[in-house]
Image 1: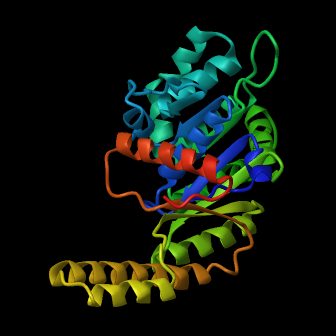
Image 2: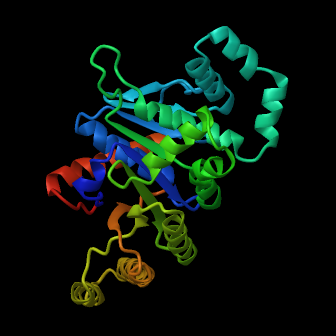
Length: 320
C-alpha cells in the first residue's frame, strides 16, 4: 500500500474519479481513514445513494445528513432534493420561502428533466461544505473534504458543470457560484483530483483517456491510484529456488498445489507490470492499494485500517 505524497494530501478538497467498479469508494475510505488518523476533521461526500460509508462503519444511513463515522471522520450521502432545500435556505434566508420554492412540483420536475441540474446541486452541496466555517472561531469546519464522484463519463460532466453555467449565465448568484466552484476545482493548490484504476487492460485505457480529458478541460489530475494490486513476494530467482525445493519434497500433492499457486501468482504479477507500463505517459503521483479479497464493506474498512497501520510502521510503503 502506498499513498500519494504529503504535498498532495495537504490539499483540503479531494475529488475521486474513475471507471465504475475500480474502487473509487475504497480510495475515498482509505484517504478518509488516513486523514482521520492524523487528527484532521474529514468529510466524505458520496454523490450517489449507495451509503457505502454508513454500511462500512455500521452507522445509521446519512439521508443527506452528516453522520459521524468515527473520531474525526464523517460522511454525507448527497440527496438532490435535500441539497436543494439546504441551498435555498442558505440563499433565501427564509426557510418557509425556501421550502415553498424547493418542494414545488414544478421545481422537482425541472430537476428531473433538465440534464445536469441534479449534478449541479450535488456539486454545490460539496462546495458549500468546503467553505463552511465554525461560528465561534471562523476557521474552516472541515480540514479535508473528499468527494466520491460519479463514474468516468458522468464524472466528467459533473466537474464540467460550472463551465456550462459560465457559458449560459452572464451574471447573478448562479454565475457567481459557478465561478467560485471552478476556481476551486481548477486550482491545483486547493484541489487534488485522484484517478482510480485497476491493473486490467480496459480500466487502464479508460484512466489514460480520463486523465487526458481532464487536462483538456483545464483540470489537473495529480494522483493516479492503482487498486487491487497483487504484490509478488518472490523474485524470479527465489521463486525458482522454492520450486526446486518443492520438487525434492516427498509430499507430491502439496508440492504440485503450491507450485501451481506460486506460478499463478507470479504470472498475475507479471501481467500487472505490463499493464502498469502503459501508464508511463501519465505524469502524476502514483498510489497503490493491495488486493483485498471480496468482503463486506465493514471487513473492507477493517482491512484498510490494518493496511494503514502497517504503512505507518513501514514509513512509506507497506506490502500487506
